[in-house]
Image 1 (tube, one colour):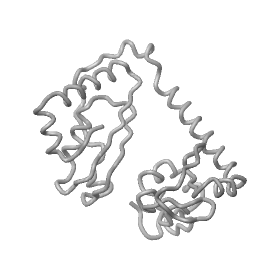
Image 2: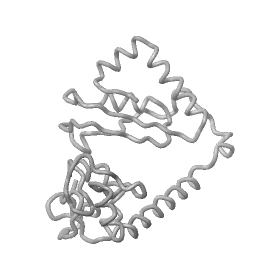
Image 3: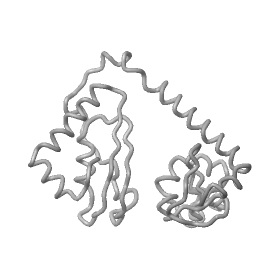
Image 4: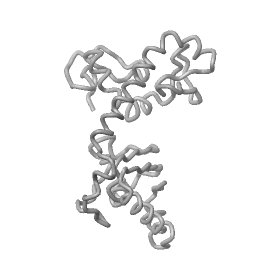
Length: 215
């Protein structure tokens, strides 16, 4: 992670644009800041700020309400939201349009099920399992906070098991997985494996000893 005066997006020096939400991340330009939103918001901004900040009065708290349009702005109450509406509505609309554009691109990138009918399915996958988190090269082995992982395109459950097994011995928090896939066969396999893990006493005991909870 870039430090001090380096841009958190491109690494260039003399970063002067600061993220208003966490007051930690710095960027060399507004363009770099805008392009880093998807990565920075959930992975760094929220943990760094610890609490949310009201977009209207700038008060902080842990029970602020999210804007239901873009889910990026926070407010103390309806009054703060109303006071900030004129300033926020343009950015809110822009964010929603970006989400729609990205969703449309993903829809074109991943063909529908009928176009994937000829793909060979493997019961246990056809590539080695890997660690989703790889803490040693990301947050660090000392990281010990609850994490929520959204996995688009599950592949197989071995990656989840590998991720849990690769957690440091000192990790005592929970890792919650949200798994999704557009392939019905993959989803059916996932449900079957989860059912086996729940019903199998041996696997259940391993899950308890692994310190992590799979949802």
